[in-house]
Image 1 (cartoon, rainbow, N blue to C red):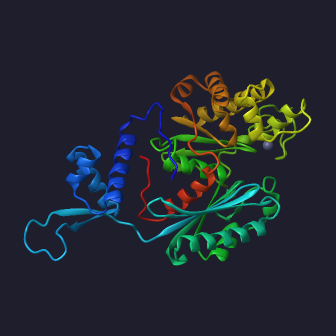
Image 2 (image 1 turned 45 degrees about the vertical axis):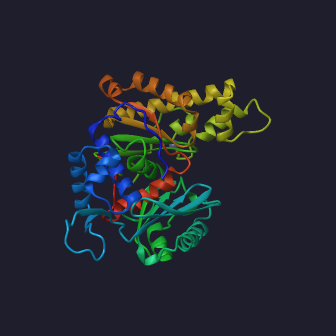
Image 3 (image 1 turned 45 degrees about the horizontal axis):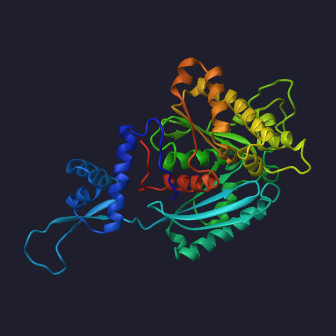
Length: 400
Ligand SMILES: [Zn+2]
């Protein structure tokens, strides 16, 4: 699982330190096989009391168990209790439907990714083909990792549109035109023969950051996915906020200008009309022969292109206005900026921070840290795995 050394305010908090120490104990057990509590303390440099507390927690969670430390066949002598990491015999599948790709991954319950597949395709308009392709890719990752389908406890599925969890269908016809009327839950359960959980892409990104990324030590945060569209995944008290029909976090359709440009959602002046990937590309393309894609605009900005730099920082300022409103409503501890646009780094983040300071109430603005996401390209795929892991029992879930 990819991780990045964290360097943020709050990293020294007790919950974060505890999580990190617990991970170190698990890592030593994974590396050494069976070992004693004293050896774990020696190897990690943690105190015996700390190790004892952490091991007790891991035992309670069913992740570690005790074995007799005597050599096989030995009689007498001090038995000496040793500890072994319990690899629960199970796995989960994660499926990410992007607008133009399908990604599938298989992970064990100890959070190790065992196999992955990616295929480019027109997911927006060819829903049935995308579902068929994902089912084939699940067969392939199971075969590659040598895992029996019967061991898979859940498939987590991320889709790039709002999800009505009650109906198991896409909640809006304007965002994913080819998926209208499709009951993804039933369709995927039938194809995979597995229990499934479905979330929208921004919620998956939030789950990835909550489980392994910039939200690990944080129970109240908003994850913003800024890419072709702009969406938010909102974590309140360590849980996703979904809303009545699954559209919580549709921050991209916040009205910034009532007389603004017409948005594909049917409203005017939405955040996406001025700050989404296509809006930025439109702006910078006017002076060019060829329209660059969003990744290229970010590259050009990093190389000093003034138009690209201005377009990205203006987008940041607009995103910040919507984020300020979100801060007033939910008072998050952190706002995590992800999605392809976040590759622009401080060029995007700084104007977001300025807008939040300017437009949010002082108490909310002072409390919130705006930080980059840990995961960008694989955020939704990892999030779909996190979704499946969280819905399976006996998993090692990080966070407070
Ligand atoms: Zn809109």
